Every structure is written in C-alpha cells, then in structure tokens.
Image (cartoon, helix red, strand yellow):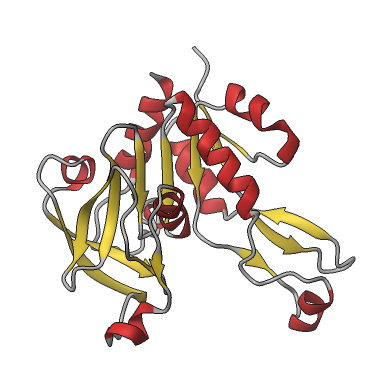
Length: 231
C-alpha cells in the first residue's frame, strides 16, 4: 500500500542571486509529514488544481513564511515578507473540502480556514486587547472534552506561540476546541468534516529539539492526520 500523499501549500521567496520569484517551505513541515507516514508534495501550478486534488490524500495549509534577501529587492519585485498565493490557496482549500479529504491548517493556515468559512480576524490583537505575549513565547492552553486535540494531548498542555492575528468571528460549522488563558482561540475543528486548525505550530513540537520542550510530542497529531488521509 502506498503512503498517503500530503499537499502542503508554500510561501513566496526571492532567489538571492537572480532576484527571481520562487517557492519555499520550512523543512519542519516536511519532516513532520514524513515522520507521520506521508509523502509531502508542493502544489506549484495553479491551473492543475483538479489533478492535485486527485493526487493528494490530504492538505496542509502552513503558517506564514517567505524569504526576502534585502528589503530593497523585495520592494523592486513587489514581494512582501510573508506573501502567499491567497486565491490559489482558497481554490485548493475548497476543492479539497468538496472531496471530504482531511485538511489541517497551522497558524496562518488555521486563520485561512476560518476566513474561508465566513469568519474573520482581529489584526494585531495583542495591542488591541493589551496582551503582551503570544509572539515568540510558551504558554498553556485548555481543550474541550471529546475534541480531537483533547484526545491527542489531554486537557491542559504547553504550546509555542508566534501569531499577531487572532480569530474573531468564527466561521460556519467551525468549533473552537482549545483556548489560551485569556480566551484566545488556539485550535478549531469543523463540526461535519475532517478539517482542523492549530493556531500554534505543532510541526515545531517534535523531533530532537521540540519547541517548547515541556510541551507534548506532536508526532501523534501528524500520525493521526495522515492515517485519516489513508482512510
């Protein structure tokens, strides 16, 4: 039996020598999917969405990423630091959703899922709500009984946090299944479909140097997700 093929959306970058546009992905996503029993693939051609959906057994929408060698080059090439192909990503998400194949959003990918389901975001919520952390820190979250994240790791555990936006209005059929101590949404699950979103970065919570070291091992999340893709 072949391993499940997991499509992972990419971020934009510039080639340092030729200032040419390119695509990039953090190796931590590749390592997490591979360790979980899947084959990671980047969907690079927007016109081939139907073929990608036929090929892929699951979809991961990762956190924001991008590489810019120098700001002046970025401006000349109209590339933002964390630019992503939003329209392409939206089409890919809805095409996978129609099939019922599993989808996992991480950080910005979690926010993308909520927005695609009719929700919205608070931008720079830390300033708006007077919260000093959630950017480059560790904190605990609490999960709802019976949720997927609760079955994976229990009621209370430590996570990393690297986000400047937060979920505000929650999309249709989306349920928040984990919160920070201030009530910030940290995990979402679709009530009818195998669609999940982590506001934190589980791909960094595994391997030889997990972040945070006191948090749970995230391998079970990817193993469980990829097992669902196999089914």
